[in-house]
Image 1 (cartoon, rainbow, N blue to C red):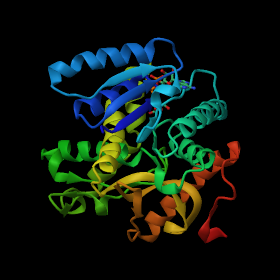
Image 2: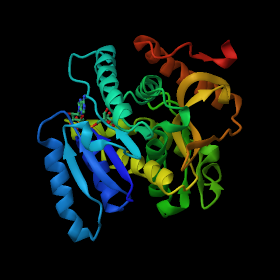
Image 3: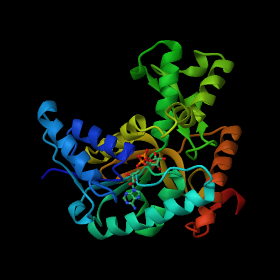
Length: 318
Ligand code: APR
């Protein structure tokens, strides 16, 4: 039996995710959207690319969740972008409503699936999906850290003129202004970048990573990034389907790890056939932990607005 991945939201990120999945022949893909014709059109277009790419992934688009039944993985990219005049809270409430609708359908049709959340604000949407689905935390994971780390890796490789294959990097924390890039744990062929670049250069790359999404929004003017976000979500799906047991920075529901309880925050996790198989706890300096706490507090602030937190608290503060 072939594996089945549903991608909810057939916009830029969703359609591109379907593209990466089919191009890698990871699974059959069902694209779902509320816009009549959009997922059907994208699905058919991708299906017609398969003979050229010599891939046997079947791609189908639908407005009806019945087509998604028994998916192994559901990647959720549905949402609306922030429009002029819309406050952050307005956006939060709209996307919360969308996520609630989507998760309800997904649970009904694919009760055993793994959820990979991509919609923003990422950590809060992951928390919403986790709380509303009732799935165990191993099966709900948010995509952010891989994207933020990939941006950092691309900038490091470009700066040092080395292969991207040689560069690993870790960015933890929430997906947003408070993300925590960790230069000490970022390496080129195993050599920490702190040995290869001066502090000012690292600071410049860290800042560009932090502003990575905004830089692209500014250039595109009418949308946000989608190639790299889609590639990151696909890497997570691949790690689960192939039981790769890959250590990747992802948003996970913390239950005391890193001193944080009851909240989705970006941390290194091991992704395999059971989903989040382990939350990897690395030693942080006092300054890094302070930054991570600040990032968690920013996530908590949004979680509290829509009330999906039970009683999330920083364990250290309780
Ligand atoms: N059910 C299914 N699809 C929906 C729903 C819903 N209730 N509401 C909106 N959508 C669809 C829209 O119709 C649209 O096709 O979600 C899609 C979003 O696509 P885009 O507007 O192109 O946005 P995109 O760039 O793909 O980003 C999607 O991912 O990275 C994040 O910040 C980004 O939250 C955003 C999400």
